[in-house]
Length: 382
Image (cartoon, rainbow, N blue to C red):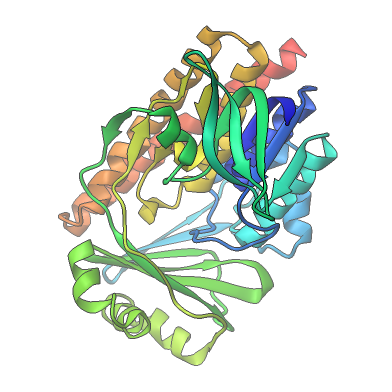
């Protein structure tokens, strides 16, 4: 039996970042994860400006760069045969975007959490929550050898993804749910020699290429679930190649000339949601609390943004602070969530899609402005 100020269930980007920030504030933090250090996971990899901004502010962006993560300074949107390329405007300490493999990003965040004084344990599985009356007071776990543990904490944070055990055991209410979901298949290729992010769209499908570590590109196709079931589920590799050829023949040709360096992974899709952000003795962060369709590649940025919102609320230490965390999370997320859901519907024509992307860009600018204002406030208060 042990006791901590905070125990965090999940030590990937949301959980590890929250652990780091709380440990930097002097709290006794334990993060547990049922997986292993540096393990891979399904991910789009792509970080938007807000995510890069957070890593820069926390002093971690040099580690991302040192890991060989390529800088992305241009994004190309392909609407059928029309290409619109947007160069990143340097500003606010961000002069490039990055899409690190999760083996890189999650590990460096865990390292930073440990350097700040947090403890991280792997191979530990939550089997229930401890309670004192109506209040959550810790977690019951099985360690890597199957031995039971009781970990007491003033606060339990669920950072354990869309199927969060903490959310389930705490009976966190679902406050809002998306209407649509997309299925995604992806793999990694070397030798594509493509600069920047590339997103390709035709009615009913999207494909793209995202540069990541080790000279690789993550190549993906996203389609409605019914098309996935009909043409991808039984043979995801051939489905991916067929989608590339139909949506982006030039990209398909590069992929055929490149070297495939992995198998094909698939995500069958799940409708997004907002869960109740906190309750007596517990809180949620990352996909455990708020998840939207990965088609707009904003999940990592969300996780890093909300890690700081939650860490600030925990440091304030009042019920009102956690209410403020929920309100700010939702205010920044709802415009992104609703626009993403509209894109995931795949019922648009290309002019309509362009207008949705403009709305998405406006929401991301609002998000960055809020993050910069918060950073200024924290610096003035320090």
